[in-house]
Length: 250
Image (cartoon, rainbow, N blue to C red; front, side):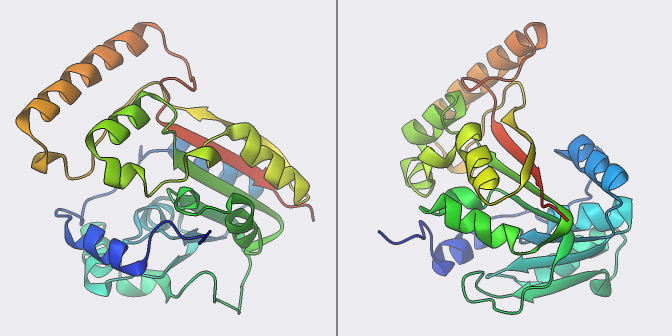
């Protein structure tokens, strides 16, 4: 089976369908506490975001932590990234950009922090794509991976109302124990592998969905938010994300 669940044209179409990409990244951006803890305790100076176009986390790390940051993706539309940098009072030179296919990239520099947010689930061979992340991690450095949890209610929404998008994801990899096991087998020390977040729902290009779908999604979203405000806990059934943090031995 082909390892790729998407191709370059998919991502060209995906990003060309988006508007409002140049946003001001806030200090409390998603996963900010986890990233701050890694940076402050591990003396992180360099970082690379894999598969991260237009570079939200690269911008976040440069803007708030002044790291030496690189963005690697096999689709980078430079004007979009430049506009994002400008929206966050950064210069074009503040982020190193590598536009390449991760599977053909030979000259691998290593970094204190290697992260991807929503990348590994687009590949069938989870161990292989994680190993490609690990190759970028310095000895003593940290690997930080996040991905959506489509085994939760949010996944049912994707499958029911956006099957094409759902089918672009490897659902079987959405398992913290599986991810932890892959890292342990590669010799890393797993700091955490868990479901993350109390509840959320989203649909790609939601404004293009029928009004009934949008209303139903909003109703369930509100009900879920009220429920998890009272009963706040991470769970496979409701948490929208999975996070993995592991350290490579020195």
